[in-house]
Amino acid sequence: MTMQAANSMAHILLVEDDDDLAELIQMQLKFQGHQVVRVTNIRDAESEFSQQPFDIVVLDRGLPDGDGLTFCQQLRQHQHWQPVLMLTARDCEMDKVAGLEAGVDDYMTKPFSVLEFQARVRNVLRRVAQLSSLDEPQAEQENRMVFGPLQIVPERHQVSLQDRQITLTATEFTLLRFLASRPGRVYSKDELLDHVWQTNHSGYHHTVCSTINRLRGKLTLEQSEHHFIQTVWGVGYKFQPLPH
Image (cartoon, rainbow, N blue to C red; front, top):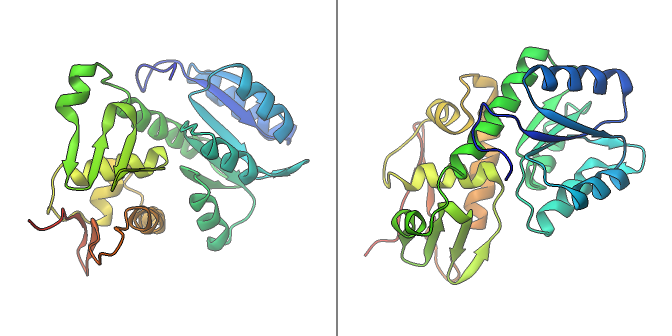
């Protein structure tokens, strides 16, 4: 990652074919002190990404040469974990779920307010900064989290379950690390929004549910009914290690 802190300059790839919207987004990002590279299609996005590192991708879904989700899926398949903020005109919840399942970290429906866009970018970058704040080998050993067959290595953004690597987005990883830091502690949706998404907007509750469900599915133990991420009905969610 090229970014060292949430409030430092980030290198951002903007993939948007609407010139007016792209100009507005670029202006707002540059106002926040970020460096922006803008392209209008998936082909050019792939080219730029292969040539230089980016801290975040702001990605339109409807592009001239295909669905923006295709590019997001390609990033995840090649083990690129840069957060993706998806922009879309589609307001259907199933479309949002499809985006989250493809590895999108956050989702904004057009039209959106400038203030909300700025806040979303800050929140995503802050989460990434928290993940990359420590990278020394000693810190890696000290912060390794082991729960039987489940191992979490924060400094490497790595999770393994029963000796197989688990692919998580930046948001999924942040959520897992947060819950696992206090096993058994139950967090409400509002608390998770505050600590993980760093927002108090209750309209994001469906995002919490979708991310929890994806994370739970990825942490499924073979030949076991145990779930590391458990629902406490009417209260919230908790991380539950395997019983001894």
